[in-house]
Length: 194
Image 1 (tube, helix red, strand yellow):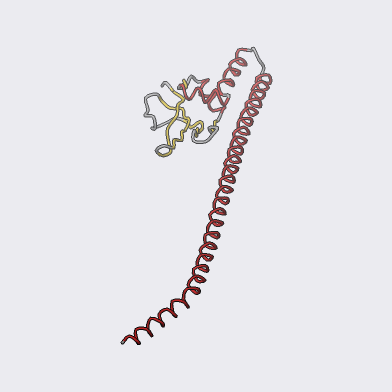
Image 2: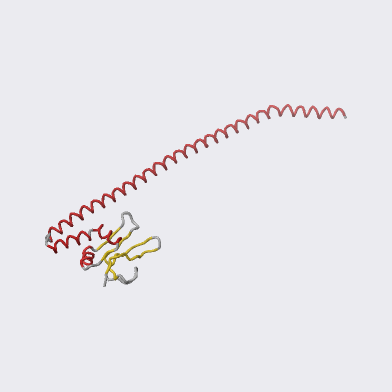
């Protein structure tokens, strides 16, 4: 029975989540599988991969063929390297200790690269947030300055309106006695004319 190491899709529409499985070639993509080896979540940055390396190496040693994507994932996590080292031990080119030492050195180097990438992403995120905050503060300052200008203009307009109303009252008060006297004089003249 030919066996493939492949991805089995789970999750919801637009948010895929994969199981890494060893399955018979004839089974459906999301159908029956022989063993679940790990998981792969491409929705996060960097992608989250949880893999049983020893289980993957066991299947590779038994002749399972990984698909292209599964091979890239196995290579990324070191299962392909460990398979290669186990083959070297079986042929007598390496001892178990040397193979394990090489594998652990590779894993440590890979972890450093992954941590550096995570730190770089965190720094980029913090920098973008700081830039957004700075731009927002600038916009708020501009809004406050514009609001202050509008408020000053409103106060000035109100003061001008009060001054104009006061001036109008003074003009009315000055003219009012004249018009009253004129009206009384006109009334008395009309009364005499009759």
